[in-house]
Image (cartoon, rainbow, N blue to C red; front, side, top):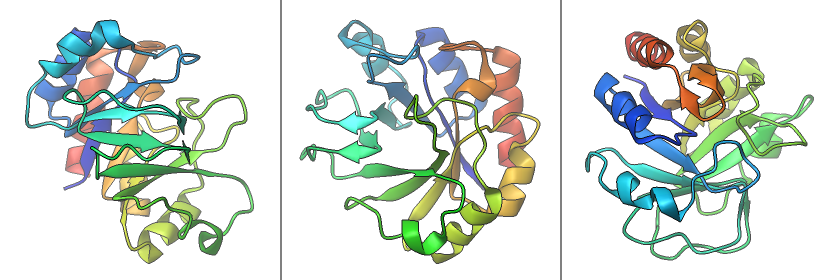
Length: 198
Protein backbone atom coordinates (compact mmCIF):
# COMPACT_ATOMS: atom_id res chain seq x y z
CA UNK A 1 0.00 0.00 0.00
CA UNK A 2 1.32 3.44 -0.92
CA UNK A 3 2.30 5.68 1.98
CA UNK A 4 0.90 9.22 2.25
CA UNK A 5 2.62 12.35 3.51
CA UNK A 6 0.58 15.50 4.10
CA UNK A 7 2.84 18.54 3.88
CA UNK A 8 2.64 22.26 4.54
CA UNK A 9 0.60 21.90 7.71
CA UNK A 10 0.23 25.09 9.75
CA UNK A 11 -2.66 24.27 12.07
CA UNK A 12 -2.94 21.63 14.78
CA UNK A 13 -6.48 20.68 13.80
CA UNK A 14 -5.40 19.99 10.21
CA UNK A 15 -2.47 17.84 11.31
CA UNK A 16 -4.64 15.83 13.68
CA UNK A 17 -7.29 15.37 11.00
CA UNK A 18 -4.69 14.17 8.47
CA UNK A 19 -3.47 11.57 10.94
CA UNK A 20 -7.02 10.55 11.82
CA UNK A 21 -7.74 9.98 8.12
CA UNK A 22 -4.68 7.73 7.84
CA UNK A 23 -1.72 9.89 6.81
CA UNK A 24 1.57 8.07 7.39
CA UNK A 25 3.69 11.21 7.88
CA UNK A 26 3.22 14.95 8.27
CA UNK A 27 5.47 17.73 7.03
CA UNK A 28 6.16 21.22 8.33
CA UNK A 29 7.74 23.94 6.19
CA UNK A 30 10.77 25.78 7.57
CA UNK A 31 11.22 28.24 4.70
CA UNK A 32 10.28 31.73 6.02
CA UNK A 33 9.15 32.92 2.56
CA UNK A 34 6.60 30.14 2.25
CA UNK A 35 2.93 30.83 3.03
CA UNK A 36 3.06 27.50 4.87
CA UNK A 37 5.95 28.46 7.16
CA UNK A 38 5.86 27.28 10.77
CA UNK A 39 8.12 28.75 13.41
CA UNK A 40 9.11 27.93 16.95
CA UNK A 41 5.70 29.04 18.21
CA UNK A 42 4.17 25.94 16.62
CA UNK A 43 6.70 23.44 17.95
CA UNK A 44 4.78 22.67 21.15
CA UNK A 45 1.68 21.38 19.40
CA UNK A 46 3.72 19.65 16.69
CA UNK A 47 5.64 17.77 19.36
CA UNK A 48 2.36 16.59 20.93
CA UNK A 49 1.05 14.97 17.72
CA UNK A 50 0.56 11.21 17.59
CA UNK A 51 3.96 9.61 18.26
CA UNK A 52 3.85 6.86 15.62
CA UNK A 53 3.61 9.15 12.58
CA UNK A 54 6.94 10.72 11.55
CA UNK A 55 7.13 14.50 11.73
CA UNK A 56 9.26 15.90 8.93
CA UNK A 57 11.08 19.25 8.94
CA UNK A 58 10.91 20.51 5.36
CA UNK A 59 13.48 22.93 3.94
CA UNK A 60 14.39 24.31 0.56
CA UNK A 61 18.00 24.91 1.57
CA UNK A 62 19.10 23.07 4.69
CA UNK A 63 21.39 25.72 6.13
CA UNK A 64 20.62 25.67 9.85
CA UNK A 65 20.21 23.09 12.60
CA UNK A 66 16.87 21.40 13.08
CA UNK A 67 15.38 21.51 16.58
CA UNK A 68 15.92 18.21 18.36
CA UNK A 69 13.05 16.41 20.02
CA UNK A 70 10.38 17.71 17.66
CA UNK A 71 11.09 16.24 14.21
CA UNK A 72 12.02 12.74 13.07
CA UNK A 73 13.34 13.38 9.55
CA UNK A 74 14.70 16.25 7.50
CA UNK A 75 13.70 16.96 3.90
CA UNK A 76 15.59 19.35 1.65
CA UNK A 77 16.43 20.40 -1.90
CA UNK A 78 19.86 21.90 -1.23
CA UNK A 79 22.12 20.81 1.61
CA UNK A 80 24.67 23.16 3.13
CA UNK A 81 24.82 21.32 6.45
CA UNK A 82 24.02 17.80 7.49
CA UNK A 83 21.86 17.60 10.61
CA UNK A 84 23.77 14.93 12.47
CA UNK A 85 21.02 13.92 14.95
CA UNK A 86 18.76 13.00 12.00
CA UNK A 87 20.22 10.06 10.07
CA UNK A 88 17.12 9.82 7.87
CA UNK A 89 17.00 12.43 5.14
CA UNK A 90 14.68 12.96 2.20
CA UNK A 91 16.44 14.53 -0.78
CA UNK A 92 14.13 16.43 -3.13
CA UNK A 93 14.84 16.30 -6.86
CA UNK A 94 13.03 19.03 -8.78
CA UNK A 95 12.39 17.71 -12.27
CA UNK A 96 12.83 19.98 -15.30
CA UNK A 97 11.61 19.40 -18.84
CA UNK A 98 14.05 17.38 -20.91
CA UNK A 99 15.89 15.75 -18.03
CA UNK A 100 16.69 12.06 -18.11
CA UNK A 101 16.68 9.53 -15.29
CA UNK A 102 20.46 9.11 -15.62
CA UNK A 103 20.90 12.80 -14.79
CA UNK A 104 18.98 12.48 -11.56
CA UNK A 105 19.19 9.16 -9.75
CA UNK A 106 22.73 9.69 -8.48
CA UNK A 107 22.13 13.25 -7.24
CA UNK A 108 21.58 12.28 -3.64
CA UNK A 109 23.00 13.47 -0.36
CA UNK A 110 23.22 10.26 1.66
CA UNK A 111 19.45 10.16 1.44
CA UNK A 112 17.12 7.55 2.88
CA UNK A 113 14.58 8.42 0.20
CA UNK A 114 14.17 10.60 -2.87
CA UNK A 115 11.26 12.95 -3.48
CA UNK A 116 10.32 13.98 -7.01
CA UNK A 117 8.76 17.43 -7.39
CA UNK A 118 8.31 19.90 -10.23
CA UNK A 119 10.94 22.58 -10.77
CA UNK A 120 9.79 26.18 -10.44
CA UNK A 121 12.28 28.98 -10.06
CA UNK A 122 10.10 31.01 -7.70
CA UNK A 123 9.63 28.31 -5.06
CA UNK A 124 11.20 25.14 -3.70
CA UNK A 125 7.85 23.34 -3.74
CA UNK A 126 4.14 23.58 -3.06
CA UNK A 127 3.44 25.15 -6.46
CA UNK A 128 0.85 22.61 -7.61
CA UNK A 129 2.77 21.89 -10.83
CA UNK A 130 2.80 18.27 -11.96
CA UNK A 131 5.97 16.31 -12.70
CA UNK A 132 6.50 14.18 -15.80
CA UNK A 133 5.03 10.88 -14.63
CA UNK A 134 6.90 8.91 -17.32
CA UNK A 135 10.24 10.26 -16.10
CA UNK A 136 9.17 9.70 -12.49
CA UNK A 137 8.26 6.07 -13.28
CA UNK A 138 11.69 5.48 -14.83
CA UNK A 139 13.41 6.93 -11.76
CA UNK A 140 11.33 4.68 -9.50
CA UNK A 141 12.39 1.63 -11.51
CA UNK A 142 16.09 2.52 -11.47
CA UNK A 143 16.70 4.26 -8.16
CA UNK A 144 18.32 2.36 -5.33
CA UNK A 145 16.30 4.30 -2.76
CA UNK A 146 12.59 4.56 -2.12
CA UNK A 147 10.90 7.29 -4.12
CA UNK A 148 8.20 9.72 -3.00
CA UNK A 149 6.10 11.38 -5.68
CA UNK A 150 4.99 15.00 -5.21
CA UNK A 151 3.98 17.82 -7.54
CA UNK A 152 0.44 18.67 -8.58
CA UNK A 153 -1.25 15.73 -6.90
CA UNK A 154 -4.93 16.02 -6.01
CA UNK A 155 -7.70 13.70 -4.81
CA UNK A 156 -8.75 13.39 -8.46
CA UNK A 157 -5.41 12.33 -9.96
CA UNK A 158 -3.46 10.62 -7.17
CA UNK A 159 -4.75 7.11 -7.91
CA UNK A 160 -3.74 7.39 -11.57
CA UNK A 161 -0.35 8.82 -10.56
CA UNK A 162 0.26 5.83 -8.28
CA UNK A 163 -0.76 3.34 -10.96
CA UNK A 164 1.58 4.92 -13.49
CA UNK A 165 4.59 5.77 -11.32
CA UNK A 166 4.45 3.12 -8.55
CA UNK A 167 6.14 5.28 -5.89
CA UNK A 168 6.77 4.21 -2.32
CA UNK A 169 4.78 7.23 -1.14
CA UNK A 170 2.96 10.33 -2.33
CA UNK A 171 3.22 13.84 -0.93
CA UNK A 172 0.66 16.63 -1.15
CA UNK A 173 0.38 20.22 0.07
CA UNK A 174 -1.58 22.58 -2.19
CA UNK A 175 -3.77 19.83 -3.66
CA UNK A 176 -5.72 19.44 -0.41
CA UNK A 177 -6.03 23.10 0.58
CA UNK A 178 -8.75 25.72 0.66
CA UNK A 179 -6.03 28.39 1.03
CA UNK A 180 -2.22 28.18 1.37
CA UNK A 181 -1.52 26.41 4.65
CA UNK A 182 -5.21 25.73 5.37
CA UNK A 183 -6.26 22.16 4.63
CA UNK A 184 -9.72 21.23 3.39
CA UNK A 185 -11.11 18.33 5.40
CA UNK A 186 -12.99 16.71 2.52
CA UNK A 187 -9.97 16.94 0.20
CA UNK A 188 -7.71 15.50 2.89
CA UNK A 189 -10.03 12.55 3.41
CA UNK A 190 -10.54 11.92 -0.31
CA UNK A 191 -6.83 12.19 -1.12
CA UNK A 192 -5.74 9.74 1.55
CA UNK A 193 -8.54 7.31 0.71
CA UNK A 194 -7.78 7.43 -3.04
CA UNK A 195 -4.06 6.91 -2.45
CA UNK A 196 -4.57 4.00 -0.09
CA UNK A 197 -7.01 2.26 -2.44
CA UNK A 198 -4.97 2.72 -5.62
